[in-house]
Image (cartoon, rainbow, N blue to C red):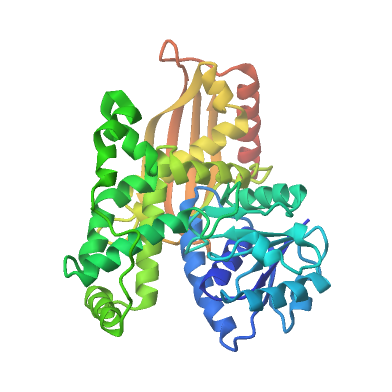
Length: 469
């Protein structure tokens, strides 16, 4: 059964939430009184459709439906999840929650994107406080997985569990904040860095670009995959965190920072920051910067995915829920995916080595289909590729959706030969590969016949493919 979400407020954050749900197969109703809302959301969706599929090696579900509503009532009446992303004014949020609860189901989760208000403040005067919680995301919501899930003591336990399940199911990471606190967790770190940045600019020590360079060329890369405390544990060497604290702890009493003091944001300082930011990035449009940001995030997170670490491990876990059985179709649809930006080269198209990757992925899908899966391999048996012949017939570009059709040409004891065709959305052939594989015993590292069940499935596929040729 298709899940339904209501998006109340379709700005940058609301639009990002909309895209994350929609691209994961949810039907969406959105309410935003802004006459430009539909145009703005379409631009966010364009970026999300380009970016999110490139994180995965499996296709996302078919998109849900999208409907723009004229009232909150119309948007929320049948929603399983309601995400509020209206301006950060408590009086506005209270009015919106009252309208939502007049028309929504009692079991629906109502999440607020607020970065500044605690859930108890949001719940004041509401009819059903148990269904309201903070679900604070990070921009772009369609790519970054962290959601700070902050309940109050009045938030219902079942609503919290439902929220965790839903967020996880669409590839997000719900960080359950056990005690409500101003600015939650992550924004407190951002606030500290922001304050220091303002002082460095005001005192003429660094420009906006130099501060950004200090982050992106240094600790930002470490934080992206290890966070704060794991990074410092390593800094302590073999003695670990205790040694790090003993060595660097005394500096906490030194007058390095101005965290308890904030420079006044005068017109002069504001203009100085704006001028430096224009000099740094003014030659690019906001859309150019968003696309660069998305492509960089994709490359970083896919690198983490290859290592099974941090945000990459989340992508892999979510991807497993997207994997579909091959079914009885001839030829088999062994791969269906978007080409990621990190697969392209200096010519702007997919590197030839990645053709080998995609046909290898097709062979892996075939192996899983015949029962030569992870469990089979762990028991000491597998297939090794002995020979491939690849023909490159057309360019393949980043973001392009492709699929691979696979036929079994030969199944003869330990020998199997596959023929793959990589095709574009219009079914044009982009490349072909003939692949010869041998079944191998992983202990002896020598070829041998497959186990009987695998051999039987392999033979049945070969016969079906021969009859359909």
